[in-house]
Length: 136
Image (cartoon, rainbow, N blue to C red):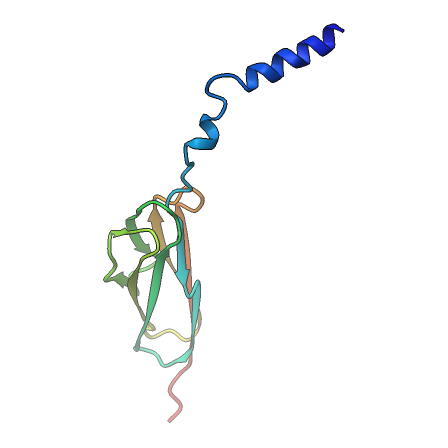
């Protein structure tokens, strides 16, 4: 009998004033980043060339996506041309340039996008290319 009374008391407390607040106050998912394409392979390229690719950064969340910074893994990679704030459902473009320089072989570089996305605050965009010598 005491256990039944305790269960009833807990149930009444849960149904008391303010119990519906969690249902009536919308919970925000916040800003959410998506990058298209999520990575890119330039394929074969010659030395001393500048390779370019435009990426789309989209906010599929329900709050403004703030791009705090965009950095690259080396001086041979440049990322520019993006908006600092992306509204929900909107997108901005990121122009990335990769210089192949004089070395040959496979190269892998990264672009790091730091945002206010709580689930993915640091997004790594991976780039690849295979630099082959010019065989005239």
